[in-house]
Length: 116
Image (cartoon, rainbow, N blue to C red; front, side, top):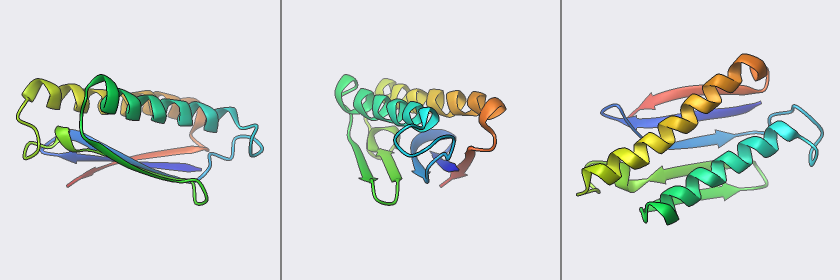
């Protein structure tokens, strides 16, 4: 199972962490894992490149842990409110996409929110 924890500050999403393999298929042939990986990299690349935003991420392929923090979504780091809400909205979109996927893949995905 892949467990997702989405981080919020004052209701604004600013990051997430993913832990574990989905277990939907064999390693290297797991389409659910591939879909999640592709979506995760889309989020990271969009924040970093398209939004020219400060993002840190740590990907540990051995333990399959990924942690992403979008610093510009935090009020103390971002002077541009539009960028702050755009970055947060992108992460929120990922949260909703995964939440929709739970209907079919509830045995393979787990999603929580953490207000920090």
